[in-house]
Length: 193
View 1 (tube, rainbow, N blue to C red):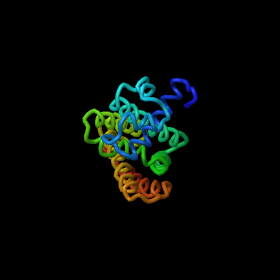
View 2 (view 1 turned 30 degrees about the vertical axis):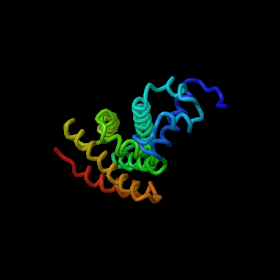
View 3 (view 1 turned 60 degrees about the vertical axis):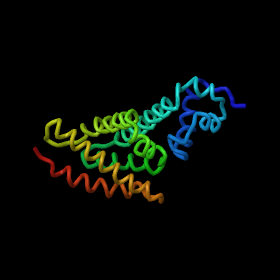
View 4 (view 1 turned 180 degrees about the horizontal axis):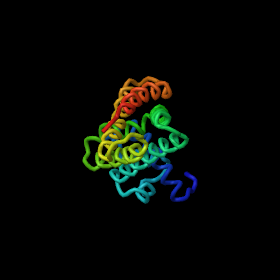
């Protein structure tokens, strides 16, 4: 019998278990029964927190996106200049990817790209990253230019991460962050109107 948790703690537990189950079997091959069984709860308990499998997956996308943004925000909090913001931002991001492949693949894998509703959720996460990164770009450029560069930086990080995760090998997130931030910083230093 599962111990009694507060509603918030139960929801967090269910999201953690759902991440593991969806990562292992994919969205389409996962049922609410699978998640409930893995969590050690009954299906009605699962439905008290999530109306449907879509609702659960949507909540999971939102949760993973929020945790990623929080990691980057905390990681760049001590930055004092453009170079350190670039390095620390990529370091926080690649550490998040290295520590949580499942979350990365949930956001940027198949189900979240092929389904229109899930794709919108991923775009919200991406836009949140862009909104967090854009003000950190210390260049004398207009806002639209800054947003374009922020999107490019997000794409750079995602592309590198996709390659690393798909290879299925462990990688040094600090080394990758240094390599990618060197490239990004070289480009950012040359930005002008």
